[in-house]
Image (cartoon, rainbow, N blue to C red):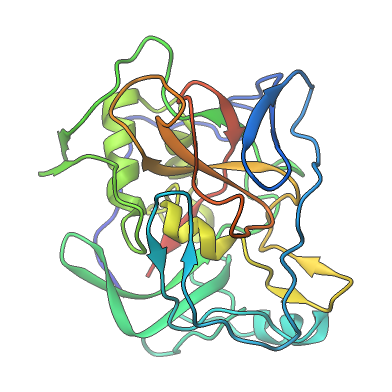
Length: 284
């Protein structure tokens, strides 16, 4: 169990903070684009289905984000298996976690590495959990921008005794990325909304890195006809905390990803002021 926590500059009410009247739709499986709409709508996507009960240990690539090699990640057999797993609450120490368990923050565990991974300033974690559906107080995940229009882009920032750049895309780096975004761009951002969440009495929720989101956006279970994505909205595009370029704007300023996550719609660079959906995770 790690001991470090993210501290917000000021409290931020999550529900409805950034209800922007815009949406990002997946352009097939190859990218994202802005469209006028009152809410993030569904889009035609590849379901990326896998056989029930399988565990994928191969790499998952994105458009220049590198790859991740999950230790324990895959799909449960069906809704019954998912319900049985969720009935077990784990803490990663006295109760080791398995895929689909309920984590200390009340979310579902979507990644487990028994050997441990670096997660924050020298700490070691063994699992990632995603915030439960409805975490923001709304039925759907809220929308936010990566950085505000009146803020410059950034290469590095210093906060909480460390220097961060938000370029990391690997597992365990989302918290540091989130710190950098909140410090440079303020709390009224996707990262600020994610880190303001305190579900389960935990104050270390954050916006996932690209590598972490790739795992979060895989189905928790997939029967071939029914897929369930860890509380995410199917067909929507989500912000990650990984920036591709320090510039404030540009076609590759920061990475987002679509649900379901497939080889074609992961790691799409887009302008930081575009709206996209927000879903927090935490490492423990």
